[in-house]
Length: 101
Image (cartoon, rainbow, N blue to C red):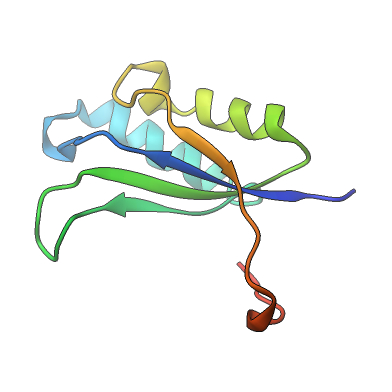
């Protein structure tokens, strides 16, 4: 099956310390349980040590619908911690050769 890489860009200034601990635990368990599709995920900051201003995921999915389902099923989305992200199809520049994520 041919997989497509997507980038999900969440632009929400979520302070993890203000999120209910059980929701954050469920969010991180969800990421761990979906590492075969959510290849890389992490928070974004405008500078080192600054508060979070968003998050970015790299997703490997069969199609856009699958990538959207992965985003929508995350506990941060189900509990309205994150608004709907922007989802892009992503391809690396040819000069990088084979890249394993």
